[in-house]
Length: 54
Image (cartoon, rainbow, N blue to C red):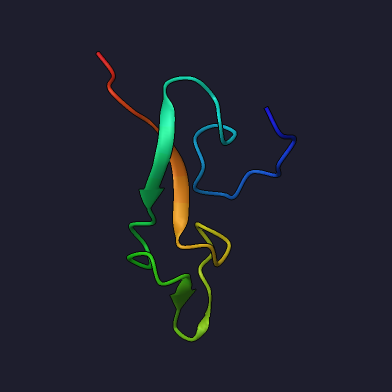
């Protein structure tokens, strides 16, 4: 698993079993909020979240 930094909205590191990429809810995938990089996804437009669940 690559040693990538987490964005504030990530629940786990990319590639962690049981997780997947999702569109950032704050910026709706644009990477920008009020003309600046989104503070949740750090401007990527994506977050890593747990999938499935019980």
